[in-house]
Amino acid sequence: MINLATPDIGDAERERVQAVLDSGQLADGPQVRKFETEFATHCEVSHAVATANGTTALHAALKGLGIGSGDCVLTTPFSFIASANAVRLAGAEPIFADIDPTTYTLDPNSVEQAIAAHDGAVDAIIAVHLYGLPADMTRLRKIADEHDIPLVEDAAQAHGAAVDGEPVGSLGDVACFSFYPTKNMTTGEGGMVVTDDPVVAARTERFVNHGRGDEGYTDVGHNFRMTSIAAAIGLAQLECLPEYVATRREYAAILTDALSATDLTTPVEPSDRRHAYNQYTVRCQDRDGLIDQLTAHDIGHGVYYPTPINEQEAYSGVTADTPEAKRAAAEVCSLPVHPALDQRDIERVAEVVQTYG
Image (cartoon, rainbow, N blue to C red; front, side):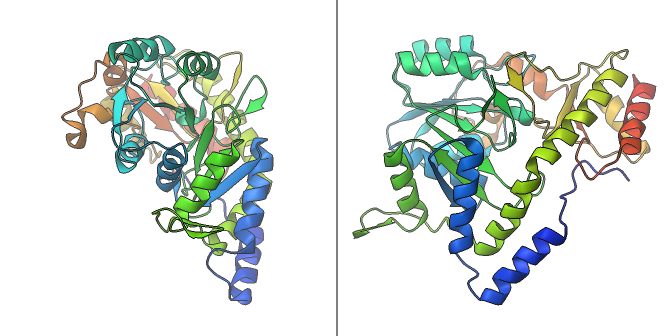
C-alpha cells in the first residue's frame, strides 16, 4: 500500500521527546519558547506563538487582530472547514469569495467584488495557501492595503512555500500554521501564529494562555497552549523541513512530467511562487473512475475538499456565489508525494494514473 500521507518520525524526535519526559516538564515550557523562536526565524518574522493545533492558531490570530462580534471576515469556501470555523469561533461571520480555477486559491477579482458587494464592511481577509501553493499575495496585499483590512495567511498546508523568495508567514499581517501529522512537518497536533506586529503577538499570547499577561488575567482567553512534548518533536522536524519540501517538489516534478500526456490537469506553479506540495492535486472529469483505479492498485488518495464550506450544513445560512469552488470540489483528487516514499513508489503512482488517463 502506498499511503497518501506518512509522518517521518525518527531518532531525533524520539531523543528530544525522551529528554522532555526525563525533565518532568511536559506542559508549556522552555522547549515551546525555543520552538517559537526558531519557527519565527524560519518565517523571517519577529514573533511566534505556539498553540495546540492549527484551528486554535487561526482563532487566536483573529482575536489577536481584535476580530469579534459584528465583524465580517472574507475567506475562501474551498478549504478545510477550520478556515471558516475560526471566524465563527472568534465571534465574527464569514464572507466567501470564489477561487482561481488554476491555483485553487482566492481569486483577487472575486475578493474585490465581494468587498464591494458588502459595501466595504469587511474586517479581515484570510487567504488560504491551499495544497502548499501560496495565494496571490501580491494582489491580495494590495487589496487589503487599499481597504485598510488586515490580511491573514492560513498557511496550514504551506510550510516551506514562498512568494518572490519571501517565505509564507511573512507576507500577511499575521499567519497561521498547522502541525497535524499530514502536514509538511508535524508535532503530532500543534499550531503556530507568526507576526511582525508586537501588539498582535501580545494579544495572541494572552488569548492562548487564559488571557494572562504581565499584569495578571487582563482578558478572557482559552488554554490553547502547546505542550513541551509537541515542541520537542517540532524542533527536530523543523531541521528537516527544507529536505522534506525539496523531496516533495522532486516527486511532484516526476508526476507532472509523467502525467503530461494524460487528460488530467496537473498542479500549476506561477513564476512568482514556490509550491511546497503538501498535496499533489490533479483535476479530472471522471474522478470516480480515477479513484477506482487508485483503489484497485492500493494507491492512497484523497479528495480535498468534496463540498465547499458554504454548502456545508453549518453554513447553510451564508449566501455565496462561488461556481469555481463548486466545480473544483467535484473534480479534484490528491496523490501521494510525501518524503516517506521513494522514487519507485512515485513511479508506481504515475504508472497507475497513466493507465487510467
